[in-house]
Length: 281
Image: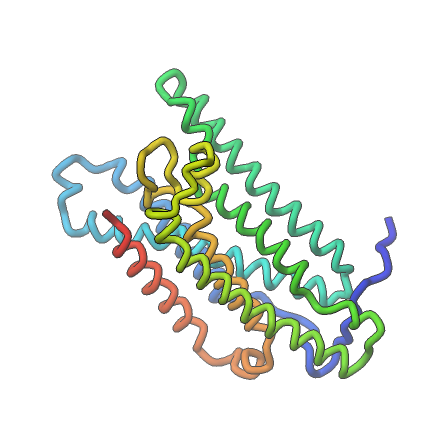
């Protein structure tokens, strides 16, 4: 089937990266998250009660708290890289939006299927309420869906359809800068809204299976830090989106051969560790 005429045409000149090579530090960061996740779920399965009292075990559990923030952060980075690459290939905005929506819905569906699988494997001991537990795949899917809508709203203006050359490139850069700033603002709003939504302004009028997506309350009387609700976990995705868009900026392109990206990773790990430590009861 032949593709439709692109809604946005961006020339591939010296001011726009015609090709964007695979970023090794992103792959390393993803691999690290996988290792941390595996050791978090498997390491303690081989330990007795005494071994769980050791310093090594405590540190392994602390490190395991970094896996989810890294995964969600990288979802935002990947979203930015994929959408911008498609836009540089003159893919219609509508098609990019549909692709992102489908991917988010697909991951969210996988999260629901995982809950069903665990329920079946644990039957009859597993409670039916576990079918509605909000886990990391659920929030990854929701994060991608939210970023897709956000990208659709803040994408390059339609005036680019009649623009060409340097003017179009300038408009695209302004669009990226605007989207980057707004992404960070949304992340900040999510972070600031989390405390009241977890305490004084909880949406108690919602059924618990819906409120769980807001604050992770599940079937308990108070929100649970080990569940993955929109507030605050989606904030990591929008920070990742901002970082991914920043990689297309002139500054990042000029500095891409330097070693500043690992510093960004270290900052993310430190922030996520501090956040997890401060909210843990």
